[in-house]
Image (cartoon, rainbow, N blue to C red; front, side, top):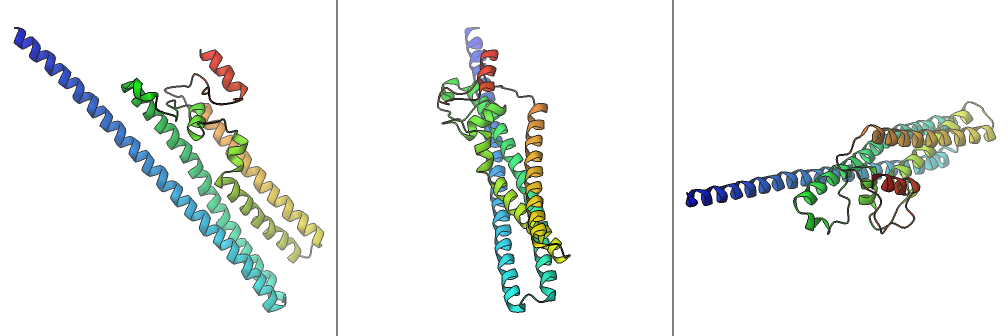
Length: 249
């Protein structure tokens, strides 16, 4: 009887170890899949941004060379507007992709945070070595993006590839609209004003769309492991995160 009990106990422990190993393998496979998808998306969008900036540079140089070669003949305005229109369309398409990849990036970060939380449940001792967050909410995402100090959303947006794409696309679109007004006979001051206004509107609308979509995502999303509060090494964290920490505690 004792031998049978020992065998049953050994078999139960072996089954538990096998289940744990299987769980770790599944989590690791999903983790590497998310890492690969994130790396591919970032590489693809950076290539598209590089191609667009190259087109803008080449297009503006071409406009200048055409002006010098044609002595600003009658057909120059049509050629310049055609180039600017093409750059504006390519810029808008590139900007859409950049915004999509920006959303995908924090999606991958949140997913990897959730997997990291599962690792922490399996081995709590190993969780003490994690600097990135194990929580799959907005605060956890922000911690993973910057776990050594608090980085404001304003700073994050200004330093992003999205902001670069927005400014370049808005500038090119503004130049196209201003040039079109000048070609239609509008005074130079009016054409410049139209270009500035169009560029500002493109920038403002895109930033509004980005922020609105970001807030809508977190309004609908329900995390599996919400954060208790900001990490202790964050200096001067936002007050709403501190309030959330006190409430959850």
